[in-house]
Length: 183
Image (cartoon, rainbow, N blue to C red; front, side):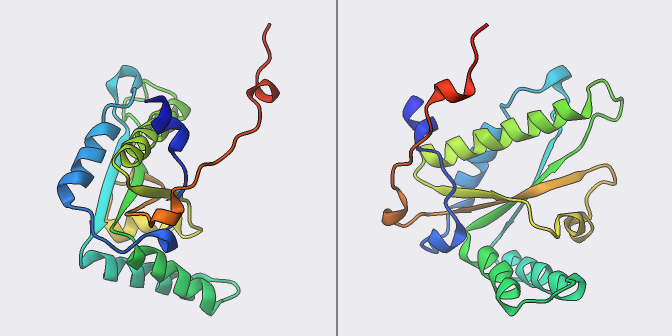
């Protein structure tokens, strides 16, 4: 487990091979995500998985939404939005739906959802897959596209794919002592 945690890193869609991950493996990752801690068992995470032909429509949606709403349009950004989706095997839209009874503060629901994503990410790493959590500027437009529940809040997109061999390099961290104070 320790090596999986230390090997986890962002692997971006332009670093994916283009190989499609079987839906069964994606389901396994989402099952791991579902085991995240959840105060009062509210299970606030909601995942919408986009794969196959649906990626084409989603890529067009993101690119065209950007084109229609950008204060300063860039062809580069327009094309990059599309390519990130198309280069990925699957895109998991990360949503959070707070407890309707408000038994838990919203920050705890956000933390639980982030822990679910961390579980997904660690599972992907353990299976030799790559991933990247992105929070695009168009994040507020995604719920209407997916027709989510009114109280669902989009927290980002998790791009999944098979990384190229060159992408599996070790990374370094600063010394822990810089981030810990013993009292």
